[in-house]
Amino acid sequence: MTEQEWQECVELASGGEWPIPRELISDYNNWLCRSSVGRALFFREQIEEAMLVLSTIVEVVPSEAVPASGMSEVEHKILCLRDLAKIVWGLTANAEAALRFWDEAVERCANWQHPFNSVARGEISYGRLVMLLAARQPAAVTAGVQAMITSERFEREQVNSYRYFGYKFMAEKEFTLKNYQKAALLYEQAFAYYPKSAAGLRDEVTAKALPDAEERCHKFQTMSSMQYLQWDLTPAAVIRR
Image 1 (cartoon, helix red, strand yellow):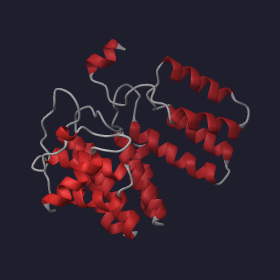
Image 2 (cartoon, helix red, strand yellow):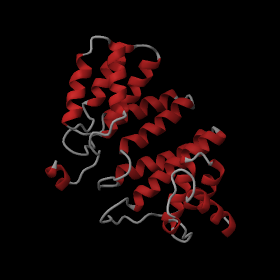
Image 3 (cartoon, rainbow, N blue to C red):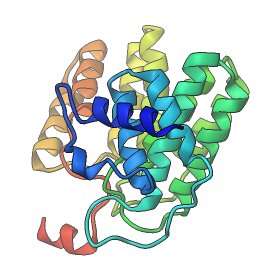
């Protein structure tokens, strides 16, 4: 990547509707700057530029240090791998190439023993399932779902993003097939593992009480778009709540 190409990418990331302050992302030698720029470009659907920047991060080995605040280097690397997987699949439909990125991202999620500040671990595995479904690899999809819904990795108490996203994935498939009763039951199973505040618990009771299965599905879908609580919380944060 040339200096001119880098400066052009920084300019794109620091402008537009959601600008990132240039002073926070301009240092090419800091791979975290490249991570922020590449992911920002992907979010803005500037795919070629995003690929150019993110490809410089493939061989980076993130520090295992836990920061006092903000995202860890491990999280940065996971998000870069996620976006690279989506880009490769979108441009080439090459499942093998895209899966290399998904698999590393999933493995890093499983191995990181500290709270995430960015994304639910199970959401990375869910993204992998979506790609496998699009790639028409049913055996891999089945194995992936089974691994998720039997995961014993609990973020806290009964909150488990792997199980939530595994059941959510199955519910979405049934909903697409108009199997609303089955889909509603799967959504109900999914939300047993969703981080819910008092408002979330009330919404769950409301959803379960709806007599029409399709309507229950729509209510659960609305709930899935709401972040009642963070997925990962430190013990102190749990006590404060």
